[in-house]
Image (cartoon, rainbow over all chains, first blue to last red; front, side, top):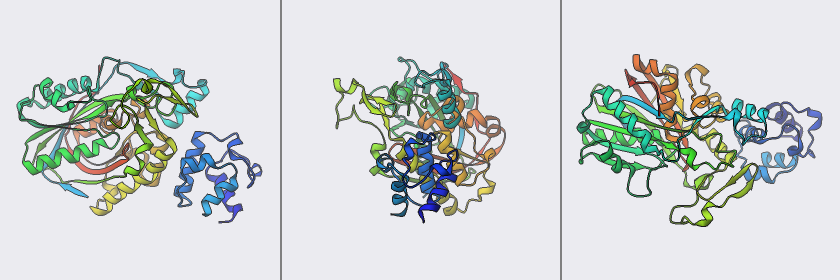
Length: 75
Length: 350
């Protein structure tokens, strides 16, 4: 999956209230206004249901940028 | 996968503390907006809380006594009592044995404890029905429930606003005309640290240290005697495992999913349960919730949801139902049951 598609889907499924222009590979997603414990759960669900990947709580804790998430999604 | 034949579920009775706390007034939240968001997404507004002197056993007793009265059963007829709880009165001996005397059951009544949590109702149905079928025990009672609020740290946002107290009694009897019950059960001990109470067993003996609060960050501050819940990992486990166990049950036993009247899930939290419902493509009207008024009370949530939301129907009609529970262990299960005129009454508030 390309990084661009990954971010588009992430915006559609997880960061629904965040402007896509604020989301680049370098974005620190935990600094987005929308980020909270429920967004984290949505992220887990998105990985599980749409990307068919498991992302653990520790992996989310250790991730900083959207690129980190993309790397997990494409690993 | 297991099948049990010739056992009928005759009655479900529930009891919960009369004392209620409202999450909109819960000081654990930063402000009203924070509290409202929690109620909307997690689904729990009110929690039933037992006082310090009330144990789960004290809720089981009135539920059981009411059940015997409504069924018009002689207590001597009860040949098996299974108690599923994580909050017994004592570490030893078994809660079920203490209750044998307190409930006035005969000394030959088979008494067993199973310390399961959120999957407990499924395992409880399986165990009691299987033993009754195998050994032709005519009548039996399954008690499930917890005073889970005693295991939640007052300073833990992941458990304190979620946990609630309740206890239930489910009665079974041999009946050759009863429909078969089907079960899909599983467990994964590799996830045991995801929901656990660390201290008080023999790996970490209870000590002064067990009473000290430790700040784990992100609104979680707890003691060794409190439940620790790694929310994200539990969520990840449940969104994949719960739909899977239900689908396995349906496919293995060729169940016509459209003909199932209700799918009653363990009440984990609304956000998670709705994901499970959507993943299984189940219509809203077939998936009842009791989270708003009764919170998460571990192995009591499935029968409490039935009593809270479909009490009249289960009493007056024949229903095809699938139940599914998932949680601490990690442990999970799903079961199919056809009920007919189950004896119920409104949840007793004590």
